[in-house]
Image (cartoon, rainbow, N blue to C red; front, side, top):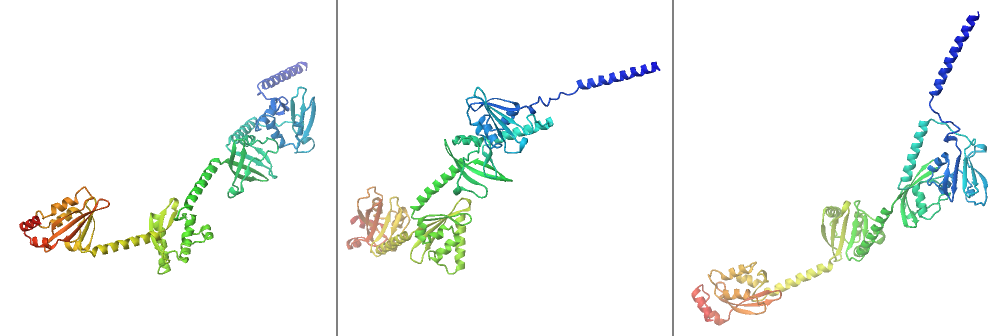
Length: 520
């Protein structure tokens, strides 16, 4: 019995030794795990500041500061103000060590967040943030998940802080509970202190408000006035606002307004009526001359009527040519609009009152058209008077018994009378053609050389006279060249005296004619 018991004990000891050895090997090969008490997750959250600047902080404290807009007491104060109502202890100064405890707004009893504010012997400020539950409470999560969340959080913070716009988050009382770095920097430039609650640095402009949630706001800063286009999005009881810089847009709008004011002042002094219609054919711009010329009511044109409404109103005021029927009137208006939109178009309106208007249509970019109304009554009257005077002068010249023809400086025929046409035929266009007519069938017409020399002389101040053998059955003609202003010359043909008519027979005998001319 004894040997069997001994063998069993030895066998059990060997088995136990093997098990212990295996356990030791598994213990040595286990992966290294951080101790919960010694990890950063349960380390105390302590901040140490002097004169508002961070001196030292624990790992959890550094994590909190990384999420603040600024790594100093002012930045941490903004973070704490969202969780504590009373932060007056941060502003207190003490000659010796003091200690105050502030409770958070969320939770009750031991679950409330606590902040311990202590002033040390050397004047530093130590803040201890105690997590709810217990002073060493912590949460253990999967390391990969925690790392992923931290990386995503850091990325989102970088994106929001680097955004070239002002981003704020507001609670249901419209108080700013969060802002990105751009907003805090803008608040500093505006001279506002970054205290809680965050200051409102944007002043909305109701006159420049856009549709919906879009509005225009201004910010007065130390370096001037800045403009922003603000957009809001509601998330439950809170609202997120985005303010995009709009300085360039505001400047462009201001330049456009100044340009339009300059154009308006210029158009206001023009005696020509101006009416510009957009692509929808609504009146967008007009000047006072349009009202003076057409008699349209100011309230009517200020309401931006359509083109057809304006023309119908002009028809009621008898300021357009009266057509035979309304159908032809509408067709005329459609033709006027299409012609003005296609290119330069001009019409002359003879109004029932005796006035005459010139209406010019011009196309503009984006399908707009402009109409110019010009009173040309005086011009038409002057033209008619000039034409009447010219006709009267021609009647007087035609009533003379002398043939008249006028040449300009380059030998072109300016005018002639009816007696000249009866004598020589229709007036030629040039002096060379007239000389050919005066030569007739002669190789060298008697007296033509002297007349040619007189008409081609450079001296335009000397009056010359001579004789020329006229057409058949007319005999000798006396000619007179009279200089006129502008280097023009007036040539008059008249019958010669009786002695000359007897000395020069009206026959086509060159020798006898030349002898008669020489005798004279």
